[in-house]
Image (cartoon, rainbow, N blue to C red; front, side, top):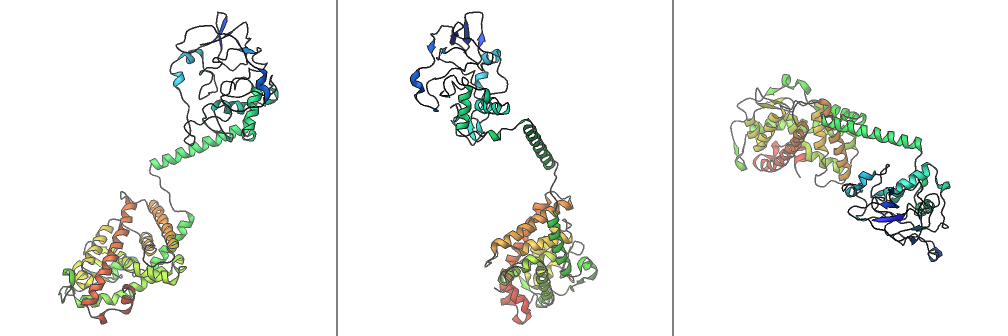
Length: 476
C-alpha cells in the first residue's frame, strides 16, 4: 500500500495515474490484500543526480511530474506507480476502480508477437515490450504516448522542470512528458510513421478491404471454387491440343475406320518367350507394320511444341526415347472399346488382350488394357489427352538429360495448366485430378516394363522383323 499525503500533493486533473481521493486525509494507491499504513515523504531529487544525462532503464527515481501535473517536489517512492497504473497492455480507456480491484485484471496479458524474445524490454522505459512500433521495440504505453503526441502535436506543450535530465523508466515514464518524448526520438522512433486522421482512416479501410478479400477467398475455398486457366495457360493449352489433334490418327472417327485383327492371328504360340510369355510371329509381324507410323506421330507431336524444339538435340532424343512407348500406350488406352473388349492401335487396328499379349508385349499388354478400362470412365477429351502426353514428354528424370531444370519448369507449366483445365471442365468424378495424375505413374510403369520386355523380344524374334525406327527408339 502506498500513500501520498494530501497536504503535500496537489493532484492535477491531467495526471495519468489511478489516484483515488478518499474521505480521509490521504490519496491512496490501492493494492490487493494490503492494509493501510502511513509513509514518510521523501525528497524527490538530489542535485548530484543531474551531473550527466542518463537513459538507462531501472535507475533510481529522478523526476516528478512536471508542473502542469504534480505541483509538489515530494513523494513517497516506495511504489509511486503500482502495477495497475502500468499494465502490460495499455488500452485506450483507463480501468475503473472496480476493474482495478478485480483479481482477474492483473492476470490479463497482451498479445506478444512471435518475433520478440520472451523477456524483450521496451527501449524507452524498460517495461515489457509488445511489438515493433514506429521502428522501435516498445511497450503499448510508449507506443500510445508517442502516437498521441505526434497526432495531437502535443510536444511543443511539454516542459521539464529539471533541465531535461530525467531518467525515464517504467516507474517514472508518466512523470515527465518532455523527457519521455525526447527519449522516444533518441532511441529512433519515427515521427513520419505516425499517420494523421485521413491516412489512418485510409489504412483502416485498406485493412478492412484486405480482411474482406481474405474472407471471400476462404469462402470460395470452402464452397470448392478452383482457379481456371489464365490467358497464358489457354494459349499453352491451345498449342498442345492442336499438336495432338494433328498427329492423332483417325481422330474421333477411329471407331468407324478401325479394322479388327483376324481372330486366328495371335492365337497360335510359335516361340516360347521368357517369363512364361508367348510370341505369335504372325501377330508380331502385323504389329510391326503399324509401329513405325505410330512412333513417327509421337515425334511429330513433340516437334510441334516450341518448348521442346528449343531444347538441345541430345535432350530431345532422350526425352523421345523415354516417352515414346508411354504416349503410344496412352493413345491406345483411350481407344478402349468395352463392347468388343479391344484396343485400337494407331487408330486403325483393333486387337484383343490375347492378341496383343501373344504378339510380343506379354504382361505389358495386361497393363495397357487395364489402363484403357480405367480411363473409359474418365471421359477424357482431346485436350486432356494432349496435356497428359506433354507431361509425359517433359519428364526431367530421364537419365542423361542436360537441361534438367528447364525441362522440369516446362513440365510444371503443363501440370498447372492441366490442373486449371480440369477445374474448367468440372468433371463429376470425385478426386478427378489426383486420380488422373496416378495414370501418369501407370504409364511410366508401362514404359519401364516394355523396356525390359523389348530385350526378351530381341532374343526370341528374328532381327529382320524389327523396323529400323523401332530399334532406334527402344535400343539403348
